[in-house]
Length: 509
Image (tube, one colour):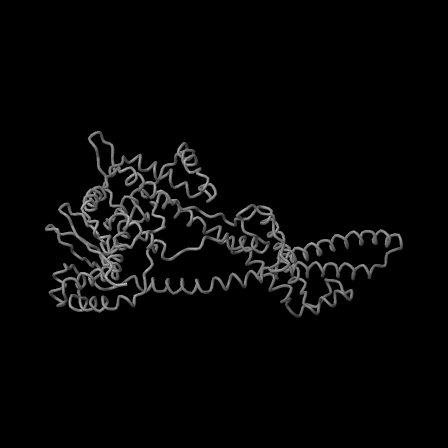
């Protein structure tokens, strides 16, 4: 499951953890259902501490909130106080942490090594070809006329090879990482300087993505809560982040722990979350973007982000190294055998007692790796595209529900909305910034493609929608929970006191 809310430092929660462990010891079971009163009675903790501890346990053991007939909250733990998912997730978390540490080091090392492999090996192999040519020329016993013809051909070939080596050296000089001799590429205003090794790096690993703030969703949530009188429901979080109802419940539970939130249930059975402590302000606002999820569609980044010419040059140079490494392995071109070649020994007569490591194995492995990584990214890109398509399709459905307040949507309309919005994933950031989303969506909608029923079923399941059959046989998807909670939280916000925002008179400064 995607992490939508990064946890804060748990040192501040030690007291709550102690209360939670007390309740855990006194209410252990295979499957646990508790009210706050149950927890307080069994553990001996006050009601307030019991409620905070239950919220912690709910988040830690993936419990769910339920509402009894009398309107009381029931904390349900279907797995008890066990974590059958923990072993797999712990391994994943460990690998993610190791990858985050190793990735910058690996990228830097590979940038340097790529420069060496592609440029230096091209120079080495070209120099070897020149040496082999002149060594073979010195063995020629042709007549003077033939030598004259050969001399002209030698001159032409020498000039071609010289120009290739010269161009490669200048490319390394101009596009290398040196701070004083780097040549600035002609660029448009606002576009960052780009070098050849950046293109090669993007060819292998893909274009660099924007820097991510691990607390971005948390700050967006807090700004939204404060802007809505400190009262929110599950539907607010779903619309804001584009997540499922279950994920929204877990996020609100976590926020209730961190920011002294209060959970209540009204007469309609709606679960309401209040954060009066977040409303107090000394006049400092928030500049955080609180736009809805459908206004922030996901896009699929290009495979390399380079110009076609840059990719062709990278492929050509690396292919040359790859082919020459195979030649070196086939003819056993060790450093010693290279000396024999320059002495006039033919390729077919070179000794084959050892394997070419420097000119064979090393460039073969790294040139192969330079091709393998982008090929792997291309093969696995389908999964990324699929996630973006699904996420944007869900955002389109949420826009119909919350943006247009349509809590009952005909089945064909819901499928069409999902399909149209999912295609936005193929738009570039430049297209989105240019405001071409509407035109793109319109073009896509003119060529509709049926969305599989299982995808629509998954969407409605995540959003707790119900399929309703009308008298005429048509079907609608009803999102009654969202409609009920929308009405309840609207009334609650109107009742919120403005005094909650006032810290009071200053008595000491």
